[in-house]
Image 1 (cartoon, rainbow, N blue to C red):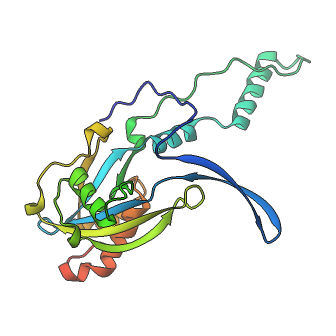
Image 2 (image 1 turned 60 degrees about the vertical axis):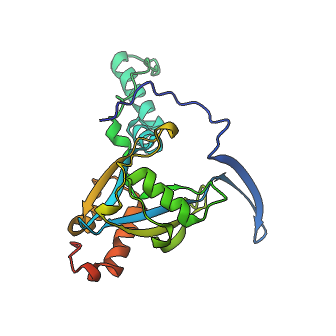
Image 3 (image 1 turned 90 degrees about the vertical axis):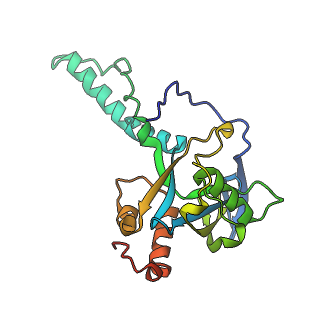
Length: 244
């Protein structure tokens, strides 16, 4: 289990991955403004192992997910104010004519476990190498994260779509790759020098749709969509129920 500690949230003044902007524009005569992030496009790959009839996913700690979960457990401002008023009224007693006083701030909620920030995802990566095609970038990610060496020509393009349209609007292109145990040339896990700590996870084909719709399993929309795509397009080929 990952150990997460010494958390410090600070302003982001410079980043190689995200750049915040505010755009002003007129829409049908109405002046509007919108805040957005400029970021890289990305690729993702649905990997299916034909030897073991399972999907190959990655599992990793995501700080953004973790912080959202932590923020969700914190009392909202109106809740804090109500508790402060209640505490002050109890301390003053029924005969006091003085207004409520705000008690000292109580300790914040306990830090969530690291598992609160762990998600199941498709193998994926940023499109940040202009000299490589999307297929070549996807091939590199499959090798680095999951340990399978798949020729770029064997990657099947599923579709592309916009993700985070309210904030980033970046495009992700999804591929499908069939691998076998013979293609496995390493353990995967990502690039340690880049700070990646990735666990390779296998989901049996017959459990795929149950996995996709289980809300207790934190996962990306890419996992759900790609499993549905496989069920609609590839399941008859393998004549195995995807347990819908």
